[in-house]
Length: 401
Picture (tube, rainbow, N blue to C red):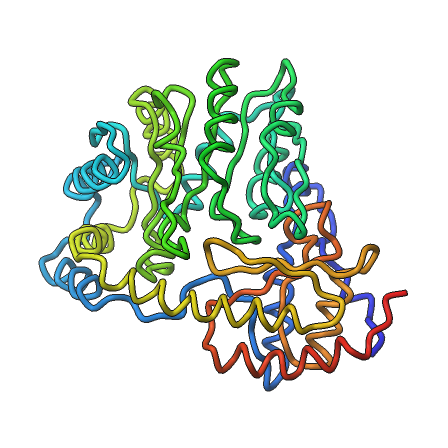
């Protein structure tokens, strides 16, 4: 099926009223694909990046009870004291380091935390290092503030692992920040402790800020221990760690995230936070307290479910012509590559139009992976099976020579 010009219209027309910096922000490929899919019938989504499991009942109950108690006003700007205290205890126990509530700020989802961290550090003439592929938020926010970005490419044949020496070699005199994301969206890659330690140590020596996106930190498979940046740094002076309840407890729409850093950094960012969203959602901060005190039953169930889906998806990708896969160690994504030179956006659009399977093109996540697709297994096993009943015969008919 031929593609129309509309299929490639990623940008809105320029208008002199708007700040030119807005033109550095691409229209997300995720939104483009999902919007197109919404106009079609019988679509199977391997595109959605949020948990499909129901939110734990104790979390829902806590949010409802907070509403019924009249907990609908503002909290302190740093967040609900009970949540800050619970997060400090939780992270302190998990990573065997002393944290206080003054090291934490609650935000409107991890997105606001990332926005605050990246835009507070980036400025004209400042250089940042970002993995490629990576979550689409990082580089545009840096460039929107005049910063420069060097992207470090990773490959499916190497499980999209980040080479710490490549990161270190990319450091320049005007480098101010390094962005890390493990487990990764879109690849599901988990960086080993040695990688993190090498990068964190070099960054600390040079006075470079590490901004670590760890929203998938509980989606770690095969019984492995998660090496957070928090467990790899001697102090928090050059480290900011971002996470949220969205993926861990299926609370994406509740919009409760946080940022962990030095007390000095949190003090500065609290003032900035007051000029963005002011405070996070109050009733759902109480829901977050309940999540942290509710035990691991939900997380264990989620890991068992996603492990089975991951294993089956890896098998199906291996059976699919023209796709090169690997075994992701975390999150709920697989980022297989297509033959060199293949146009992943073209393939994703044709795959959607001709088979009704919605995936996300690789160029959504970086410039080095235009021949890739992101597949999400945050959907049922039945949907995964049905999707590949369509994908495999379709791919068998393709000629990439």
